[in-house]
Image (cartoon, rainbow, N blue to C red; front, side, top):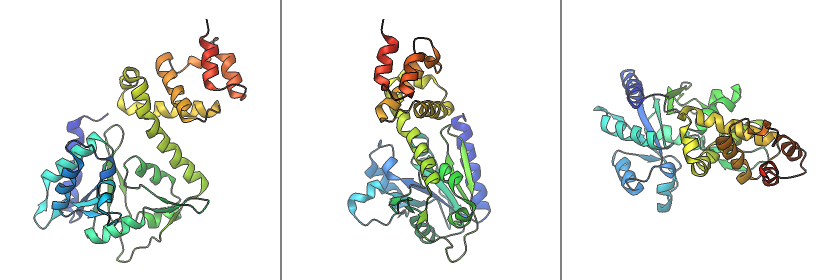
Length: 291
């Protein structure tokens, strides 16, 4: 995992190189995921004072604190270092900020970003695609087919984010032509939808593991927590455990008993019955732990 100083240096170096290349730099701040200390209203006033533009275009006042905002970090005077530092602090405290370098103006970029939040599931069900979420962004980058990617990422230069290990990563963007080549919505096939759904489940389960088995989960190195959670969810899939609470319980058991707990003699016959659908996880736990 990167140290705080390493992350700060990486973000600053990337930003300064973008400015040197005569690119505009923006922060994309997701108010819905903002750490609310200080209050989100204060943070919203701060970014609006810097010229932030709503990336979803929802005019309702109640939507202001639940929408992403594109915040210019550069102007004719150069880089706003204080605002860059502030957005980095927010990103270090929660998955609420990504950064973009682009040749596009704020208004042109925000219009193109807005279109890229429109997606369609295989059953022709429209969804809001949270491409601005630093947890979703890399999964989306892996999921898109080549023909989709060539137009979807035509936004300029680089889309940067912090991964779960707080390391700065960047997605190389295609050149942004004067006329946008992407046509909304983005159609996702079943495999793409399932891969994004799997990634989102990891982020839903990790806070539950931190709550249910705090010491054991936080003892894991931060850059290993997501992979551990994914392994536990894969195990739940093998056992045909579908209920969310029981899928979380698989992770709790692995944290408290060790990842190989199910291979112990006391567990093996009960896991076999669980996999066959003859009992549920609670019954397997009761059987394996009965004295």
